[in-house]
Length: 190
Image 1 (tube, rainbow, N blue to C red):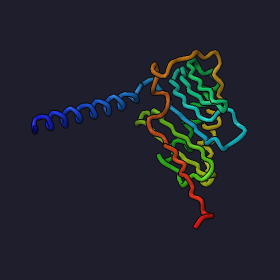
Image 2: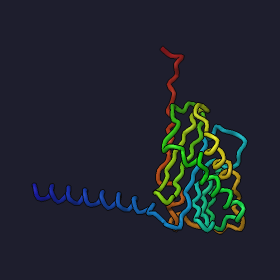
Image 3: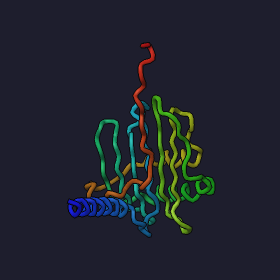
Image 4: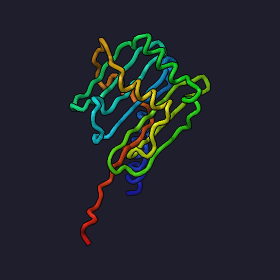
C-alpha cells in the first residue's frame, strides 16, 4: 500500500511541476520585444468601444493585439504599427516620468467600477513591470500611464490579420491584476 502512495505522490508532484513549467515558458524573454501592455475597464464605465486590450509590440513595430469590444466581440489581430504611432509609443515608454514609476500602484475595494493597466517593457537593465489599479476612481492613473492608456485605447489596427490564441498565447503581460468584485450583502435586513 505504501508503494502505491509514494508512486501516486511522485506522479502528482511531477504533473504539477510540468504544468507550472509550461506556464512559465509562455513569457520567455524575446530580445526583439519592445513591450506587452494591457488595459481593462469594468463594464460599468460607459462611452468607450474597447473594454479590454492587450498588445505585444516588437522593436520594429510588429504587433499582436487582443481586444474585447463592448459588443462582446473578441478581436485577435497581428500586423505592423504605423511608424508615426510606433515612435509615439517608444517616446511614451522611454520618458523619464514613465521609467520612474514603481511596480505596483493603486488598489482598494472595487465597489462599482475600475480600470487597470499592466506593462512589461524590456529595457537594457532588465524588464520593467508595472501594474496600476484605479478602483472606483480613487487612484487615477498618473500622467505617464494615462498617456500610454490613451495610446492603447485609440490604436486602430489597420490591415491586421487574424490569429488564433494558441499561436501567440503571450500577448498580455505575464503579471496583471485579477479584479475581484465582491458581492455586497443587503444591509436593510437585520
